[in-house]
Image (cartoon, rainbow, N blue to C red; front, side):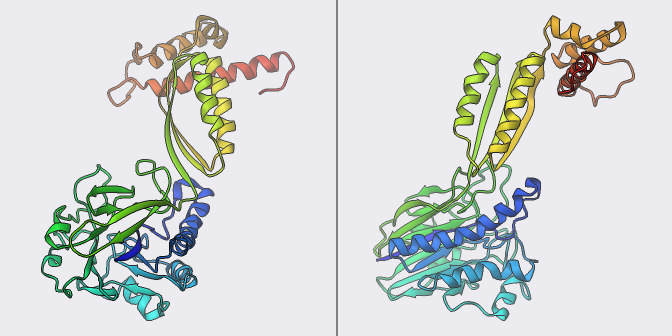
Length: 388
């Protein structure tokens, strides 16, 4: 029997550009995850970590980005780290992996650059399928069926690719035959590419990324503890948490302010500084209620690691009193009424106005909110008060 950890898709150097200043924190968390994986290995008493591709996010990296994960692995000297090239960091002549070797690898880091059996420890072999391009266009695990290992050896397949189309965001078309574990006599097939922890079949798993980087994969990062034996039985697998950030998607449906309030209360109660939240705000509210909700969302953003709000399903629908408060004259009142109708999807655009063939309800809704705020500033100024 052999026990090891299965990980994948570290993508060290991922820029996280849309997260602004928070991007640097998320980049650092991916490096810190290596330390946590090493700690889990020691806690579980295992000596090997198999990384199923995409150790780095790209091929052209700054020397510091290239070296940092290696030094983290060097620090876990009691663990051997087995690294496979993936579609983000394929093994090309004169490329990243040759540079790593030329720089000098830590003694406990092994690169798997050829499709050939490699002995991990007596009686246990890893059968790697390294990528040499982003899109191979073929199943690189085929060779495992005929790979020779000693009789009674534990055979572990290691590959980076997809066994099916998971979504439109699939990053590569490097297909892996789902029956490979059985046809190649593998105790376990360790996969990378899909960023969520997922059991595909007995003894066939995607490890997922140890630090999530998108909202459609998983909430927290994990690593897999694998216990494999010879004889064809599928390995036993236990997911273990290692991620430091939580990525969550929720919907806030603003049917009425009375209904939305408790929903927002629950979201606020679960908020913390390590949560990356994607919030879809839908529904229709009056301008005053909407402004109060927006104020709470601003406070919520300050309590989170990052808040991404999708307002595409939200419209402002002023009541008659709010509509009257927007205008001080027939022209402004007519503008407000037209914006209200457009936001509700019932209005028509002026002749000659090009809206790409559709009524921009969201644009009209945003304009109403802006007009409401200007009206409040106007009224506050008229009373001698400060604008909010």
